[in-house]
Amino acid sequence: MSIVFFGTPTFALNSLEALLKNAEHIPLVVTQPDRLGGRGHKVFVPPVKEFSVCRGIPVLQPSSIREQGFISELHRIKPEFIVVVAYGRILPKEILDLPSGGCINVHGSLLPRYRGAAPIQRALLAGDKITGVTIMKMDEGLDTGDIILKKELIIEQNDTSQSLFEKLSVTGADAIVEALKGLRDGLMWPYPQSGEPSYAPPLRKDEGKINWNRSAQEIFNFIRGMHPWPSAYTFLGNERIKVLKASCYKGAGEPGVVYEFSGDSLIVGTADGLVKIDEVQPAGKCVMKARAFAAGRRLREKHDKFV
Image 1 (cartoon, rainbow, N blue to C red):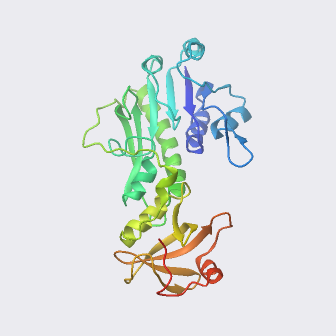
Image 2 (cartoon, rainbow, N blue to C red):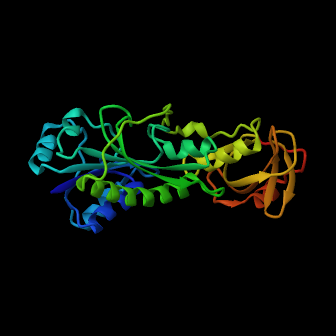
Image 3 (tube, rainbow, N blue to C red):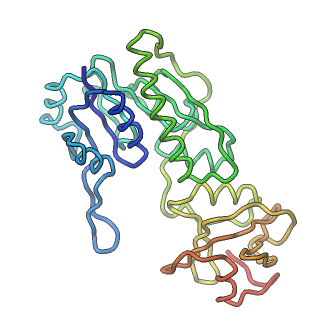
């Protein structure tokens, strides 16, 4: 029996590799088309494609997953399962109904919490302490399918979206192997989701502006959730500065005002508490210590203000 794997970003790689190590037969990988982006309009190849090509696995990148030639190829393979990990498109019913065992998804939250495209970032933005992955049998809805398996993961204080992506990628890889075994052995059965759902829409590039009139804890969670993309940012006059690393700090100060310098860091006021900024990146410049940035701009304590 075979598995067709649908996935695109780095998050999907651990699951694909785990299936291969578990001796699963994967005759086809499906990923998003290559795209142009960045300076010089370079071609960006999906990480799942690079991984698969290096291992000699055939790859298809349909511009539309409703293309009849593509669907005919899936029918020819007759997969037992289609495994979907961060593919980036909603599958039509014709594909959902195609594999004998169903389409199985690795989702980066504990469903029904955070249905949608950005569950990992939204969990950090909300200040959650626990997250996890859900292995789900897909249906036509947005992450509404029956649950096969859940695995919890504690969100550490120093986690960012980047570190949490890496951890949940590993957790998801373990979980998909366990879930497929459970389904085949008749030890696991999909069951309906229960509880109040919440949603995790994709982040927008313009969503990263820091609101200094929020609490220090909220701003700290915001900076973590926005790292590495689109990055939290603020302005000093007309200069845009990304804030890459920060933490909460005891005390009080006026929102946005540079309260004091501490080692390599800046202490900035919020509506409730202080934020210690450790690393920043001015527009078009390299990442630097916050204190070095302050020295270069000749910032003054309890005078200069971020907005």
